[in-house]
Length: 528
Ligand SMILES: CC/C=C/CC(=O)SCCNC(=O)CCNC(=O)[C@H](O)C(C)(C)COP(=O)(O)OP(=O)(O)OC[C@H]1O[C@@H](n2cnc3c(N)ncnc32)[C@H](O)[C@@H]1OP(=O)(O)O
Image 1 (cartoon, rainbow, N blue to C red):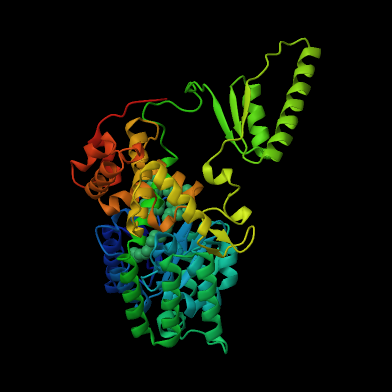
Image 2: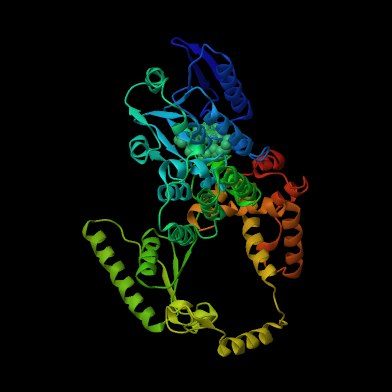
């Protein structure tokens, strides 16, 4: 942070840490030194705090989270600012997020440009606003809105922040110039009413029900996420405890979240999301330049409306199709429908003088053994289980299945054994992860982050577990390799369990973090 003396007995502290003026240790020390300088200089009457390059501050430096404990020592700075005897005015442009907003809450006044955005997005990173955010915000804007902003992490625009009472002034001009003028106007005003730490949280008669509704809401909206619920506990502390004890509780809860593992995963996701936008496959191929792999034939399972359409598309593209439907009635209907669609297509093409090659479409009624028996799972009321009704959710073991399995075992000379939850989890997940390593080795995915983001955005993988490749690193690559080796030895007929060379190469280095995998494993092959 830079310290400047301005005319009219003012000092300016400008945060400078491109690109977003994140609160690195150096920036925090700079703010503190600047403030102490201003306090000890009796010619300085007020201080303006702003950020360089049209951004106030995007909060703590997320990349440094694994190295230090964010929030805790910065909370002391926020308290010091509030207790200063000279007015400190925050001049906000761009964003004041997380620690950036906490810094502004420590200041006695907040002036912002109309396009600025402020918020406490910590929950998205698996943490809570631990530099007094959970204690100061409810003192300023009350519990209901603090619950909304802190548990959702949503930033608000300057106009909304003004209405809520987070900001004191919103202008369309330069907030620093405005703050300079404003500082001179408020020099004689008492500071005590501006010190949030000495205020109490506005009380409401139904506080208990507000909190229980908030807990129920976040459990429904963010199932499995620890940070929103823990933030509510911190807000409860703001209501139930004096400030001195409330901040201790906030520290304790913040520390719990930092150590939870969810924080590490969510912070990984933050950087993974921004890096995938910038990546292209290692072979520099892209969907625009890649040539397609040859497809010799296609199988379509199920000939409902969707299946028929899919079968038709491939058939029209000249790719042989084998369409499988276990229900003989449905199969007949589908055959007729597809044949008549193809005939219509053929006559259209012949009328327009184009050549028509009869597509290869084979219909088969032999499907997977369970499906063959009409057991499609929940939708038909039976599958591996029997359900209370079609589409029902209540399931119970089915004697039919026991009989079926015992015959299957006899035919295939298999011995029955009980399989632990752990084995189910490991065989499902590690074979999936193994495939991830395979496609990294083949150069199909540019990075583990790409695979993880696809799983988070497209397959419902819980965000707080960071994606399958991140999960592999949390388990440890040597462990994943050892388990795959064990399961592959036991099940040599399951090729997905054969450890990929890429995984073997990486595990030889111990358990390197995902960001180092590519440099350690060497250049990938390319299938694109
Ligand atoms: C000290 C007390 C502790 C308090 C706890 C906290 O403060 S936790 C942090 C809370 N803050 C955030 O969660 C903000 C996260 N950042 C954003 O939402 C956005 O980046 C932004 C600030 C709104 C800017 O968005 P924009 O689309 O304009 O740019 P990018 O997202 O591409 O970001 C530009 C580069 O800046 C990096 N970056 C952003 N925020 C941080 C941060 N807080 N710490 C470290 N780095 C940050 C981002 O990764 C981009 O970097 P590149 O290298 O260019 O990819």
